[in-house]
Length: 325
Image (cartoon, rainbow, N blue to C red):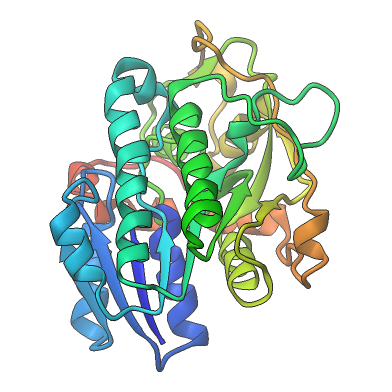
């Protein structure tokens, strides 16, 4: 099978590449990625050098002619590519609408014109808005509360429009917060790990009691695999773990692993429109045979050690000096 993976040099996309190659070593994979500053440039170069069945197209999903041509002859398209940092979306919502909205439209239309057999769009539980007591399900109304989630929600609506109007065989996954290796250190867990091991402040929004549900990236990849193999086009599937943590709990875990005290915590003004909680129900996906298989505490410790030992994968962190034991 020939896979076309947008955003395959990003956090979840790159982990999915590794997962898929481990389980389907005979398949051919094309990574289509713009290679921004948050991409795993060193890792993807090493992978494509070592794996003859993995190729890289460095291009933008906003470049429709290049995208359409690169997609020719592929059986499966998995669409990861996105602008994903909520803080950045508050500063430049237009960029997020273009990349996550128009860019996703380009992916769906190129897949349609190339008669791709199967398409999967990777989205977020943030499109459901703020958790208010009822777990998010596939039937929960789409009520995004920030420019990032609004753009992702719009792309999801477009995916379903292409399914209903043109018969594009596309499915959607909405996952809770994902953690693990190869995530650029601008998100909560990798950023705070990097700050802690370099004796920098940990800027905690508000009281730090916002809650998030955490899913290990390998479980996320297995969930996507399950949807592709057992799910149906035209359907949405939620990936949740049941592991609920306050942000301040995550901070405390990092301080413990880094052997640092709370003096490096700095409470800062809360983000505009900051959702207090996300919690999801993945019953539908579990019905297809998927469930999380990893232990949070073990994987969190492994994630901490990974960043401690691999921060030089990103050029801007190559020359930092760590102080954790």
